[in-house]
Length: 460
Image (tube, rainbow, N blue to C red):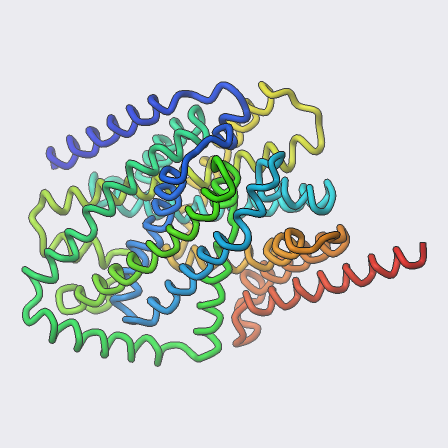
């Protein structure tokens, strides 16, 4: 216990040193986009730190344990999305030199009303994603210190909020790079250790468990549900505020493109390793173990205590990297997409507004964390709302020469409304995954708005 506490405190001190080296943001341009001066290496590391976060480490190990290679297919869809964003969308975003957020870009392409709508959706989804990260943090900190879940959540959210509030995007990206480096060294080491030294008949055992787990996974879901799951991971994190902000903060359009493509390629290797680790855990972890505890249980029962504590510290670090990105992106969206379009705010006022919004979002995330069912399920809820609410308007707006504001408004309102109704009011209304129905409704609303606006222009 003493070793665990000393190690955690020591890591927090190192993290604080890195955050101090990043310097406190003194201007809004530093807080929001780090003056668009971030190189490819930092953006790549920051994106990968988000990929290797709790959802795609703890969550994917748990899903590999339960359903084998099913979630590797899901992970490949996610990787494909990032590569496509890097090739087709990130450079378009970076070319909009006067934009700070995705909502800002939407406002640039449509009008101020669309920007405010996009800002409301962005802030809400950042709060939702942050609650999932806070829940994951609570699970790990509770494991280290044995404190109640609520206290564990508050502790990690408080530490993350401190350096994110004052350092802004630069502090977030620099600490992400540190956390990414630590985790991508430790997790492969754990995988190789368990596979080589703790698995009897490694190749035969792994093959047998792959077949058993994958068969169970595909039998547990209908083809339509699997399609919906793949669609959720293909679209659910596309251009979420932290990623859009990183695309906008790079030094050049080439750096923006390459960072997403390289991070997408990296994620393929990462997903394969996490799924394999979950499959290797099947003979060593009791059947029925909650998916969020499979990784922790596996390492606790197979590795020396020092290795287990190192894993807990690394998990805390990657959770913080995801959480700080969401808090910063949500605060910038609130300031840039909601406050500034409605009121004239000075640069100093914008910086203060961003900091207050960071603290507020952190408090909301901590309060909502206990309601998150599991890490992956929490992410899926957010994906189901984000993709229909934003993607049709954002992607078509960036692609069309003259997108029409009415189309963007109808698409965002319809997509968000249908997704929320199917997710929370009528969750079992149909066997078709809610994300597919909400996307169809959002696209139909966009086409309707585009046609109506076109007819109005013709009459003029």
